[in-house]
Image (cartoon, rainbow, N blue to C red):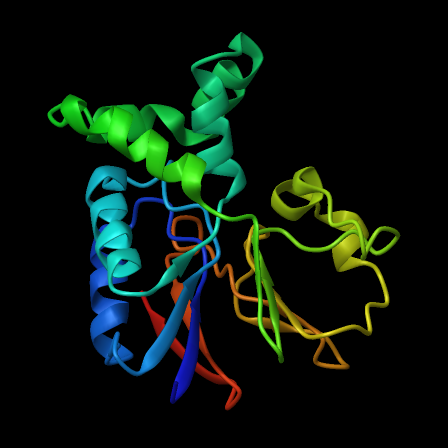
Length: 205
């Protein structure tokens, strides 16, 4: 592999994803591409976004589970999660699938197949972060939901690339161990990718 490329939270911003993949000149045969979750909700093109993610995965990319995909899974079985999901942009996802209902079941199964974490020799990739008091256990709930404890801790382990918390630009802790790549594709209008180990940043608006 020549490059490791990690893309932040997309939230249904399909056109930005297409443009970003073009800008990074992604080559499935040579690059390791990792999506850190939250592909759906808030933006208007969740359906198209998921189809493109699935295509990339079929060619070797890795897609992690985000809390929004988890809410969509749980919404079918739990009224609390249904309300939570709709409150957090789920209606936009339902609207985008309104003409593609036959794909809902398959795409939910795709969500259920997604890993919570990916780790190689040099980096850890998760959606939300790591619980600093339970680094060895890595509870699934923390991997997709944690925020303040992770952002405010003095983490000094293997560099961890994460999304979940939208920021106006790529976040890199002082020691370089925490790398936040959710730059608010929906909120701030910017979708980002970081190339590792060069730390080169690609962004589209």
